[in-house]
Image (tube, rainbow over all chains, first blue to last red):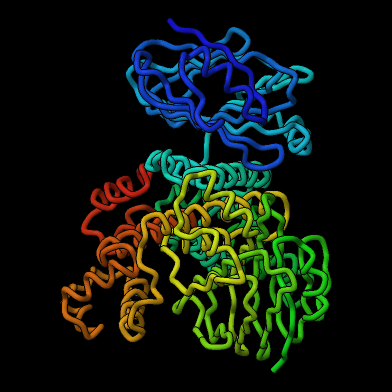
Length: 309
Length: 326
């Protein structure tokens, strides 16, 4: 197995060392082609803006290669998006994590202070996008992240450094997929990859901030249907409770689906809601003084026994 | 008619003057507008590297004439203009209709004095990108692009760059995506910068592939083709109309229609239709209101599997997988 080591920085110097170890040349401070004996493909590096850089890797290996990233003093976070259709391994603190779009866990966030190594599968096309981001820029983000930490199943935090492991959202997958179809030699590639990277990052934060409000989403049609049945219930408080099957039929869904959606929407079951409203109505009727006896109210509301009422 | 004289530039010095002219105030990166004459959002951002982005999404409540006179003409302005309504750009010897269904991409040299007329009730969505000329030159050199006579091209005394064109549908959808986002905040800034880079990338690709500049096409032909484009976009939930039908509608022979359509939009009519259908399908999926099979039916696909395979072919991801990770 071939082994190479490297460090990351926001500026292009770090590539020189890597290129040397791979016995190849650094082109234009951006491009490292993988030598033929090792496989086919390239690494592409570009500085996007102050505090953000990107590394894009697209290669197929002939023999195993282990790329170890040494920890360095640069205060960075590394967002690793993996779109390979097979499993690659990332080793963090001596634990191997599988990564790749194959098993749906395709995003890793690493801290530059922790050493990690990346082992790509042999004879498969590996595609990965790595964003290097200055910690200062992400300050706000990190703090929120730590508060939310419990919500993520597979992340561990030690005092200063952390990493996280999760999913990429669909739109970002589409964006990264579209890089695949471009040629590095194209003159538009550089601004293309910059644009994609920024949008991917934007999507990530969007998802991140949005995930806070976990209101369950119903589609408009479902919403309307459920509102309709609720109105029906409220307008028919004098009668007996119509069956669940009837209500579900009215909403145009199965009884079980109807029940669960209703509960999500109103935090109550249809029957319970019906009874509560009925009792409220009974109270109103009693207070109104228009009925002489309890029994009269009872019959009005379609109860059969006074004691039950 | 309200007449306003203002200037732009590849740095943010113009903002203050501009805001004052339209009687607005600057707040953060926003220009707060006076409600009586126009409403909406104006947002500016320095994207670094001598690039300024200016995002406009407003509705005009009266006629405006904006006269652009730049004291420092060292930049080129790219205007991606999707106005629904009446808008024209004019200068001494020319006048063009701009807007979504007209020339929606204009590239205008900063040294040119131009007038922008926009009618009452028009809804403008426009992204302006101002790039320093020295940047363009440096960029072209760095990337070994041979633009003929680049020195004379960026030398404002000898040559002014003025182009009126239609943006590619890829660019159009980029702008559409941007439009969906809430303006302001660091996330939006990331997206805006990203969009600007992608637009520049698209434009460079266009230069490199040397697609014809639309200005050279006969105007009635152009109008006809654009009408067909509009027709296709408005009928995405119908089956593909035949070439014969469209050629008839455009008053051309089939072969002329086909070649002209490809020249102007960069794609054949069928590919254009399918592409927009797929993008619409994606938008519908994002809204989460319809199931995959409902979408497939609505967009007139024969069956779900054909829809799924087309979706996968286009985006590299099946609709189900797309839905799952939304």
